[in-house]
Image 1: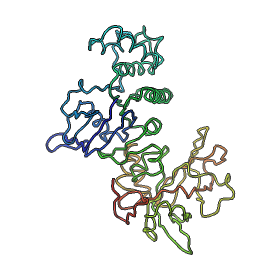
Image 2: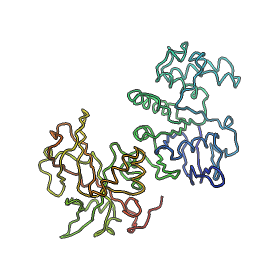
Image 3: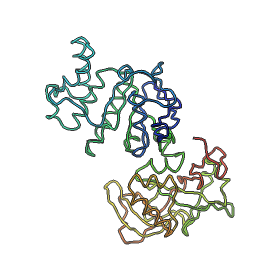
Image 4: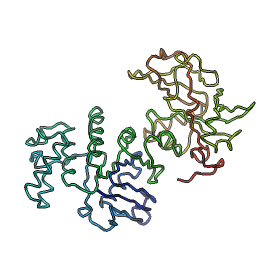
Length: 414
């Protein structure tokens, strides 16, 4: 096992080419499971390949253990990689696939057998050792690929979207399996995915990358509760956070946010936890409301008026454990470079829809409600907002407004 440190690492293709990774600084502790997550093309796989030695480094240093590995060939870095394609030898049995790399290293037969059988036990592959890949399911093949990495007993595992070829149900099963195995082995692991649910459920820490630049790295829950900026706020959380431009007003000793004819209370506790918010009184802010922080008012009859939104149900999606309700707010959609990139990751139509909403002065919101709700498509609905869990962002910089005394328009440190 070993610590992995990326110190001011950058990757530029060609003299005047694009920058894939810019000034990346991450320290992965010994035995830690860290996930790099971001939209397609953000540079996360390039970062992983630089750690593996499959991509050269333009600037900075990468350290594995006590050793700087910038000029060290991949085979000498003592790491093991797991890819999205299993790359198993179809003519070999599971046992031989797992043992192949060890045979090339000329390990003793009894040592090879010990490692393969121990890995097979960890992975639940003992009864499949004599089978060939074509006789295995997708999940079993991925476990064989994991086994091939485990038997090497490397200093670190590097995993590049290993679950992307599996169906949804199998992905859920395998991500818990990988997390369990990593915890059991305590091997330092760098895992790349574009799936933020995968990142949130697996990583000890999650690093969010946008256009090759690290946006924030922290525990999954802290990222969810304290997103550094609009991009992290919109990327982390499923369904995504609702965002709207609002005015932060104060009168008669109480504070409110006002947008689209609505007025929601901002409790004193919110200001206590976000002292920097005081500087925005009487000014514009971007307010974020997570779908799960709203509830059908009929289920919360005592909620005061200054915690309610009223609209009509555009679409109802019953998921069993909860119900997703889509509705419109008569306030312009938030259009920034951050939100456009988030929409673009879904598709060009999402960008166009957001821009049309901004022109029309409307925003589509989504609420995640208790399954007991009777909300129906085409019917009016009142929603109660948990105003203690509102998120606030500077409309010019897109940075979160927290406790560091940031003035309006002044960017926070990354």
